[in-house]
Image 1: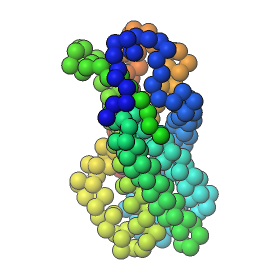
Image 2 (image 1 turned 60 degrees about the vertical axis):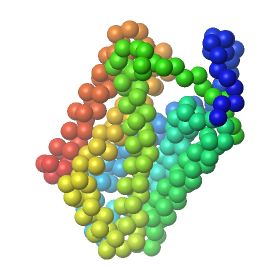
Image 3 (image 1 turned 30 degrees about the horizontal axis):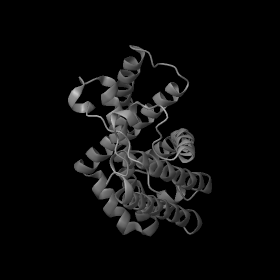
Length: 130
Length: 128
């Protein structure tokens, strides 16, 4: 469903606006900042996976259960989900419009919240309750 | 919030295939792959929090040949998307946009992602 017919004139007009100017600038900056922080996430993820791949629970508790590793991992995971939601929004804006877009965006938000919630709760369980 | 539709051009059918176009598509594709790949990480963390039995199941699946294949692809996808993001940071400073430079950056992106993935798996999986 298109709300506005895109004609040659609309595209050629430099004053044409697509989407929300203020929100788009905020989303652009959010994506850059969270993307930069995600490099730290990948380094920590590499460390955790190399130490723990295929290991048993006591080893997982020993490494992720250490608050100095588990808590930064939880915070960085939340930032990853913000980046995920923002990035998929970019894709959804290109291919869906109107109510279809809103529906997919809601599913996007729910998926990212679920990932963040399950990840953070699991890490906190390992940190505080072993 | 609703958004107005973006203009779409039939570029895939009209223009000759370029390396920069390929990297743009791969950046989006790896982004979507990473999006769903987080399920693999969170399932592992949740299994570890749950108990030894679920963790054994996850470790068996991830340790199987198919699981390893998926994790290898996930590693490449994460590294490729990270390097693509760094390329965007370079472009944000209006550097590397000239003809030749952008193709060089695009090739560097794909070559470095494959090399880095192989280095990571060689060091931490195959030689470990």
